Image (cartoon, rainbow, N blue to C red):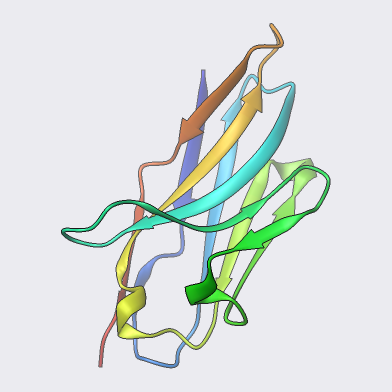
Length: 120
């Protein structure tokens, strides 16, 4: 079994920064894509940023130029650096990882979510 544990959320003022982390643990042969999603109250979950194993990144238009996704492959950890935060960035942020286990099965896992609140 694989677990994704997120950390780094919290309360920040508009214009501030936060760095989210998501560490994958368990029996892992490899990890392909990793990504961050978010879900605000009353809204659907939406993609924020993704990072392929080859290094290609993809960002939602609403975070381009403000957020940066990165990865420490040795530690099976993905990060989301969030700068110039706005109140509309308030949401629960979820990590997603497409994992290859020791049976070479490809399984998608989700973290439990971490709350980010941007407010003065």
